[in-house]
Image (cartoon, rainbow, N blue to C red; front, side, top):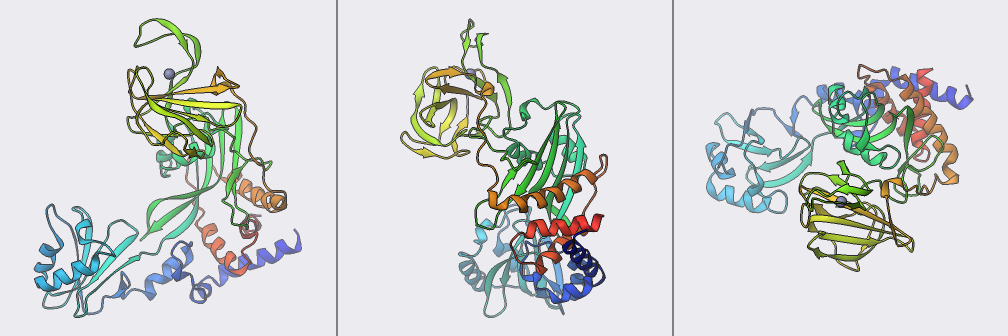
Length: 452
Ligand SMILES: [Zn+2]
C-alpha cells in the first residue's frame, strides 16, 4: 500500500466513525444532485417538522389526487379560498408553473388550519419537482425540488430473454438497456444478443423519499457476448470536455460511424446481392440493411456530415442522404417524416427523421444504405477506425479510475443485486475532502482501499 492509500484508508475509516459529524458539518443540503446516503437518516430527525420545506406545525396536512375535469379553483374553493385570491395566484403562477398544467391523477398536498382554510397548496408534477402556491395574504408561487439522493449501485445478469427483461428481473431499471445500447453502439451488436450473454454494471441510481426515480449515468460495465468480454469505463477530464466511455486500454468505444441509425431495433433484412422482394415479388439485390422499429421512432445520422438530399420518391418514400466525407455517404429510406433539409450540417446521433413505411415498404422500418468511394457496400461489414483514444495527459488518472471500477465489477455476483450504498455515501464524503481534479479516481481509490 502506498502512503497515499494509507491516508485514504484512514480517511475512509474516519468517515465511518465520524459519519454523523460530517453530516452536520457539510453543506450538501443545498446540492440536491449529490449523494446523501448517510445524511438521509439524520435529515429525517432534523426536518421532522418540515414538509416541502414548509413548517407543518399547527397544520392539518391533506394529500389528495387531482380528479378528472378538476381545476385548481375547484380544489381551492373547498378549502375556503375565495375566487379573487385564486385568480391572483393563477396569474402569479404563470411564469412558474401554469395552473392549467395541473393534471388529473397527480398528487397535491394542502396545509390547512383548524378551521379548514388552506394556507399552502403544493402540487407535484413529477416525483422530484414540486410547486408551492402560498395562499396567505401576500400570495406567492414558487418551484422547488425534493432532495435527490444518488447512490452507486451494481447489477449483474445473464440474459434469458431480452436485456430489458433481464435488467428488470434483477431489480434494475430497464431504462439502462437504452444507455447500454448507446455505450456499446459499436462494440456489441445489440441486435444479435444471445441467450447466455451477460452483463455487470455499476451505475448511479437516483432516489426521492426512498423511492428510485430512475437511473443516472452508467459508471462502468462489462458485457459478455459471443464468448468475448467488452469493458466500458466512463471517464471525464477536468478540461470541461464531455466525458466518454473507454475500454480497458483507454480506447474510445465510439467509432466514426454508429452501427445503426436507430438506438434500439432489430434487423429485418440484411444487405444481400439476392433476395425475394416482398412488395415487388421478385428476386433482386437488397443493397441496404433494414432495421424494423415502431412507426415514429427517431432515425439518427450514423456520422456527422452534410445532407445532400431530403426528398420523396415513389420507391424510397421520404428519404435523406448524407455525405460524410470524400469516402462515405449514407441514405435512410421510408421515413414517415423528414427532420432535416438539403444543405444542412448534421452531427453524429442527430435525429434526421422518423421511422415510417412510405414508398415500397410492407411495414415500418428504415432501409439504411451505405456507399464507400461511390460504391454501395454492406454497412455492417465495414470496419471503421476508432475515434480519439483517451488524452495522454489523463492516462494515469484514467488507469487508476478504471482499475478501481474494474475491481468493483469483479466483486459483483450474479443472482442478487449488491447495493453499494456505503460506497455512494463515502464517495460523496471523500470528494468533499479533495480538489476536484482526479476526484473520480481518488474516490474510487478510496473505495478500493476500503475493499482490501
Ligand atoms: Zn431495405
